[in-house]
Image (cartoon, rainbow, N blue to C red; front, side):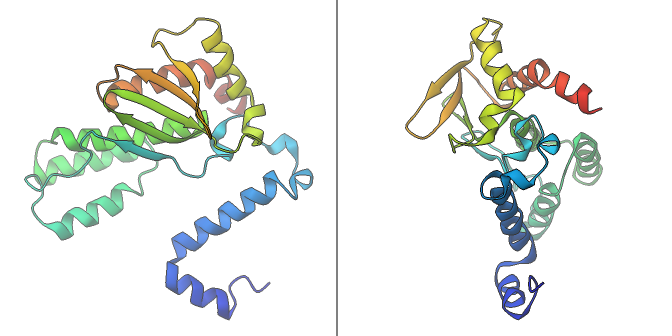
Length: 215
């Protein structure tokens, strides 16, 4: 009714429409998982973490950036970062990378790592990771913080636990628990490319059936 009335319109002007939409989406998801959970058809609930993770936070000591020696103009770099943030799939990355090569020459390592960081975030969300940290060659992937979240009843979470407990674990992945989080931990991870390979392996083991079921 009054969702875009006078007060809301002023609020949107202050924070920006994208931020407002994100807040609205998060509020709706919270209602789906709490007060009005029974009103939503359980058959429509996805079996992976996509429904429960709005955005993956990535922290790393690797260099993920467009270097100044590659593109001198600050304005141009900011424009390209904004376009980078809008990329949604591998096809988009390939087209964006081609444009950069055509305009500015061979891509530096930092830009490749920027793309790998985006891929890591894409893979992490359906696996239920809210936060991914790669620092000091240690990979830490934090599952959904809320221990009461329905995510912990999904097929994917169950498959991850079953896979690791069965010893089918070429990457020496461990599950650790901190005060607030359940964490998937892997040591000796030198870079984001290696982190990506680990997440690709895990996705292939626990998500491939989900993808075929929804295909």
